[in-house]
Image 1 (cartoon, protein in one colour):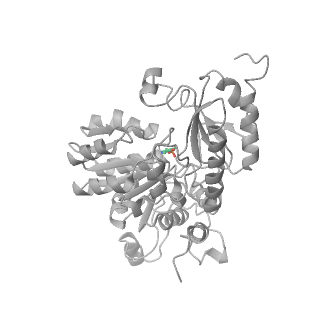
Image 2 (cartoon, rainbow, N blue to C red):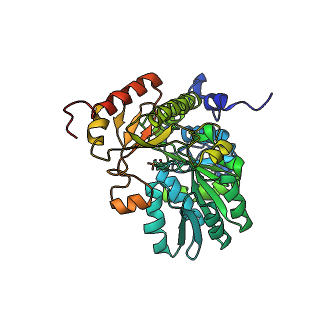
Image 3 (cartoon, rainbow, N blue to C red):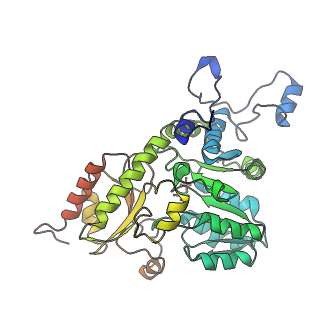
Length: 398
Ligand SMILES: *Cc1c(COP(=O)(O)O)cnc(C)c1O
């Protein structure tokens, strides 16, 4: 039989067929420890010579099923889960970077990742070089100077910049660097960084993988050798994924392929609607041919994802009326859920930057980040249309 497709893997992947008492769903194993009647067997499990579990900070059957499902979807040998996406990111960085090492990355990484690069790694005498995100020549130049790690994210938050994973992985491997990609925005349905040359791929499972905005989690996948190193760090530092969260993420993932298909198409339809709206200044969506990253995205992504952003011609203040007028969107900081969610970088992710700094980062004051849910696209467009119109009506006071 041929390799099953991703839609099949989201449902069946990583799930043992023989479960407790014939259960068809993975049980939530809340046990902290695992008992053995035989010291030899216990010893063999501890030595990883035999399948089993010792203590749930290390491994847990529910969490393991989640890890295996992600590994299958990313085409990886192995995966290890964390309590949050940030725990996964800091776990990777601290596993591979030691004092005196150098890491090359991009300016547009997720806010928390950027804080680790700017505030925490330099304190450990780790040199961090953050390059202009889409300047591939410049990134290659910095890689060629030597680095231990190349850390990428694509598409980026919030302006959906696209980075060429294959090209930069080749450059990194020439200097012996390990390549890490945050694949949260794309999801394994749309993009598999390992198949493009990356060594490790990570997700904030809190977002699209879980898909229901009700469980935090993170996960790292790659070769058994590299994942074992990251696992070794996580096991001791303790940011383990809780079994209940593991179960909820696993359950969310059953519909991942279906959800992403719908979110890809909803985001594209919303982006096309906004691109044709007279009040909208700019739309940022890699699926639009006008987007600067469209060509690279077309090569490395199977779908363009559920995330987009747009700016309003009349600046920030009109958003105070427009966004609360949306009937089918949460005004909230998360993304990737079944409900549409909107956020404003000016008052959320980039609130600490000055208007000048935001401008230098290419983030207009009136930028809105839009995470398309799985609603009917016509309803989403009608909703956006009435909300945008609400500031144009006679007597509107903004
Ligand atoms: C949310 C997010 C993270 C951090 O994940 P948490 O689960 O919130 O810790 C990392 N990277 C990206 C791209 C994200 O969107």
